[in-house]
Amino acid sequence: MAIHTFAGERVTLTTSRKFSDVVAHIEGALGRPNIGELFQKIRAAQTPQEVNQVVAAAAGPLQLMEFMRLDLGMMLRKDEHPTDRNALRFIIGNPVIMREMVRGTPDAGSYAPVTVLIDERNGGVQLSYDRVASLLAPYGDPHALQVARDLDAKVERLLSQAAGQTPNAKAP
Image 1 (cartoon, rainbow, N blue to C red):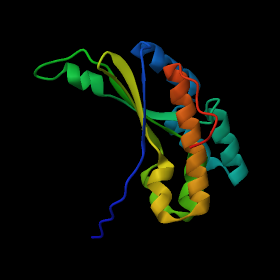
Image 2: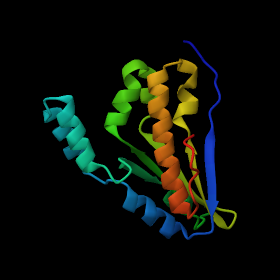
Image 3: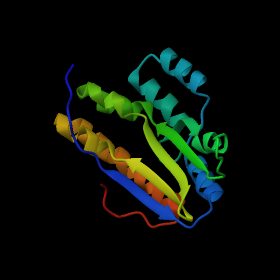
């Protein structure tokens, strides 16, 4: 067993917006396909271009889609000492982006799709995301790293908009 240690970058935004408004913005910006049907269509596609078309049709305006969500807040409400705190983990991404990262860096499959955490804490709503480029940097694949940087920029733009903040002009 090989163990490699490396650091990653976590982006965190805090907003005074209501949790439900932040979630509604995220939902509105993501494609929300039936994942089973999406992958049936991808399997049936004959060319990479057909795959790209299937995925593009299912993705939202930032070319991202929701694969799954985990309601962590529900589990907190079921605790021995329940809390009414809301917390959601969104698993989001794009299979075409994943393909591009994994092509030259197989371990990139561990980081795609990505996780966005939306959590009520300390009187505000916190949005968190681990930058994929920071996680892929140790692999040294320039193509995968550029794809990851582009993905990071999309996700960070989504989080900034959901938080009601102006996204940075520069990509991460």
